[in-house]
Length: 268
Ligand SMILES: [Zn+2]
Ligand SMILES: [Zn+2]
Image 1 (cartoon, rainbow, N blue to C red):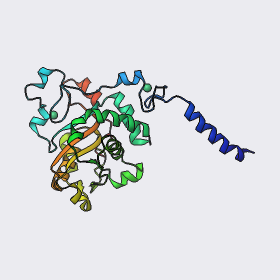
Image 2: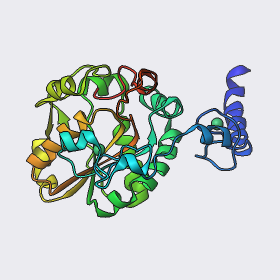
Image 3: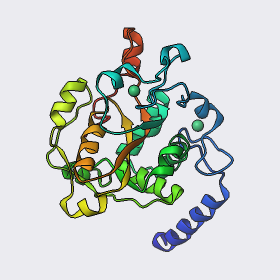
Image 4: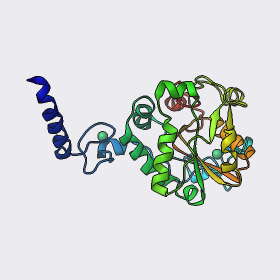
């Protein structure tokens, strides 16, 4: 009796899915349309807006802090190889609740939500890009997770902005392990030579304006290593668009620990 009931039960569930209201991708409360966040979750999120660094997109607290150049101290001291980076959200507890499940589970609706806000935050970068390339995962990580969250975001943005995606344009030549708690210099050292353009893809990268896609920007070391590989392959420009970015460390220890990324958040 039971086996005969199963198809009926599955069909019933399908009908229920159609009848039930769409749910907030973050907390599961009902919302007006699929892919939306509820008002409470939306309010928790810190969207990055002006004033922000012209190069790396880090938000400034005030216009006075931004100064006349609107370039932050980090970019002034060590200019990145990429031209401009933009992030949709500040990497805080609310952003983590959207991004961490994306890394460890197959949560397609979160890709839609993040893609929507990345499309908005990166409009100028998307307008001048010819090709989207995700930050690569090492093959061993890819086998563990089955998917690369940066590639999922790149495909979502490619669909929204009608741009081609070269999902395997870059490759990790060796695993760097988790760099979650490393300093900027340690990350940069660990990543030296760890990312390269895939030889067969080099002709497709040469002369192109490329937008690099990732989920989280921490120190920028991974994005810089990717930019170096893309420029080596002949890319004419590299910009970076991420779902979320960590603010630069501040003087106050409390603020710093609140913004400190979890191990495994980037560069893996
Ligand atoms: Zn919610
Ligand atoms: Zn900057």
